[in-house]
Image (cartoon, rainbow, N blue to C red; front, side, top):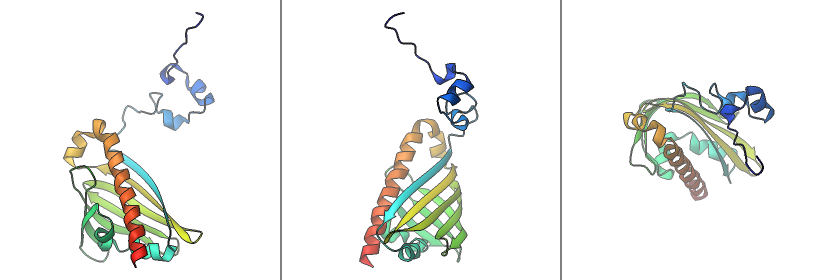
Length: 186
């Protein structure tokens, strides 16, 4: 038909055609387009990069003192130390719910700029800061892989997922601002 446009969805394309178009197979999933039948809507992976105008050693020193986070990161509401390597954190961003986790130090390596925790509670998984020098400043990379266990968040997993991701992004943006202001003040 002249003038008509055939609509081709990834489901209608063969795997070979999809791969020729540049879609990585793992991104396509078993169903053919980024969703696998057994996808866990309560599993999240986050990566945030902060450019911080302070030397790496200073940034590392602030980030390793988790008990001080509430002083400069508004969404980290409370940190209670249980011992030298474990604490309970309560966080709340824009949405009206608290996330409480028990965080256990998994790795602290100033030579490589790595701070990593394992967490359990409302979230199970891990989070890691990896700091690298960036000129006179620091590039702080935050990676987090978690499964949500808080019942309310699990109930709204599918519909709430985009909102939860934005909520996390806002929390991280405020954290960077707070860290930079804190570093300027000390």
